[in-house]
Length: 514
Ligand code: GLC
Ligand code: CA
Image (cartoon, rainbow, N blue to C red; front, side):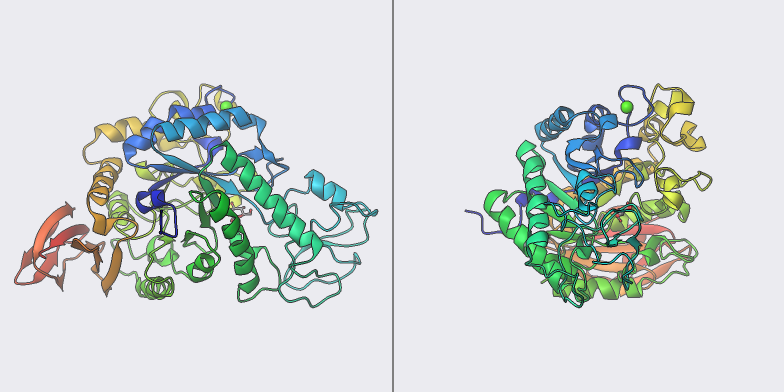
C-alpha cells in the first residue's frame, strides 16, 4: 500500500506547457491541433520532459483563448475531437509520460448554455449556477458585473473579462440576501458538475489538472478558508476514485493551496511571491548587470517552504502564456543561468513551449483572442527554417499568429545541432537533475546566500549538492563545503580552501563530500 500523500509520478515530473493553437498544425489550417502535438511527443520526451500541461482545448468562442468555455465535455473543433484527445492520452502514456488538462472552474463563457438558461427570468436548474444579485441595479463591491443583458432582473458577477461570468460556489461570509452560503443547493450543484467534468476526462485517461484561478471560486473569502474547504472536498473525491490524479493550482499562495489538497502550486507573475524579481522587472536578478535583488523572493519561498512542511511543492515556471517570455529581459547566457536555477529547484519544473530555444517575445502584435500584451508570448513554435518555421503548411495569412522573424535562426532544428545552444544546456541540466536524488522534486533546500552569487544546498538522505549561480558580470566568492564540481556553466569556478570563486555569468553544482 502506498502511504505517500501524492501520486508517485510527481516525484520526478518535469512539465512542458503546450499552448495548443501555436504548437504544431497537422492539417494545415494555420492553427495548432492535437494530432500536431502527437507528432511532437518524441521531441518533448527527448528534451527530457516527462509530463505535459495542455492549455484549454475545449469548445469556446475564444474571447480569452479558450479560458471561456462553452462545453467542458467537448474538444474544440479546431483542435480535433474527443477521440483525438484520447489518442493523445494513449500516446503520452505509451511513452511513459503524463498529461494534465487545464480546468477552468471559476467561470464560463457568456455563450455557455448554462449561462443562457441562467439569464432567463423563469426559474430553472441553472438559475443558481452563477452568482447573481437580485436586482440589476445592485452595486457589488470588488467585482464587475454583467448588467442589462438578461431577461432576469439581476446582475451576474464576472471573474475575469466581462464575458466570463463567475460560477456560483457560494460565499464564505454571506453579507447580502442574494449571496448564497457554500452549502446552499446551487453552489453544491456547481461543484458536483465540476467533479463530473473531472471524472469525464480522468476516465478517458487524463492524469490530472492545472486549475485556473483556483483560489477565486468561493467569494468573500479573504483568508482563503472557503476555497480551501472547497478544494478539500475535491481532494477527498479524487483520493477515493483517482488516487493517481495530480492537481496543480494557479493560486500563487502555496500555503493555502496545499492545505486545500493541491499537490503543487505555481508561483506567478502576480501575487506575493516576488517571482518577477528574478526574470521580469526593471533589474531582474538574473540580468548580468548584477543590480537585481532576490532576497524578497527567497524570503517568501522559504516562508512557504516551511509552512508546507518542507515539501517543496512549489512550481517555478520558466514562463507561461500570460507573461512576457524569459528572453525579453535576459540574453542567451542569462537564460542558461536562469535554467540552471529553475532546473535545480525543488517542486516540478515547468518549461513553457519555445523557452527552451529562447523564443522571443513579439512586442508588435495586435491582440489575438483576448491576449493583449500576452499575444507576443503565444506565437507559433519555431521548429526549423522551412515555411512558417515548420509549424504549418498553410498560407502565411492563415496562421493563428505570425511566426517570429527570428525563426530562420532561432529554431529547434538548428539549436539541436549547436553544442552551445540553450536547448542543449537544458538537456544537460535535466539529465543531471534526474541522476541526482538531491536535485529532484522532493529534495530539500537550504539557502546559503541570496545576493550575488545565489547559493543553496539541495540534499536528500543520500547526498548533498551545493548550487552556486552568479548571473552578474563580475567575479564573486562564497564559502562552500568540500566537494567536487559536477556541473559547470560559463567560465565556472575555482574552489580552494573552502572558498568558491565563481566567474561572472557562471554557475557550478558541487557534490559535497559526505
Ligand atoms: C488564468 C489564465 C489566463 C486567463 C485567466 C482567466 O490566469 O492563465 O490565461 O486569461 O485565468 O481564465
Ligand atoms: Ca490545424
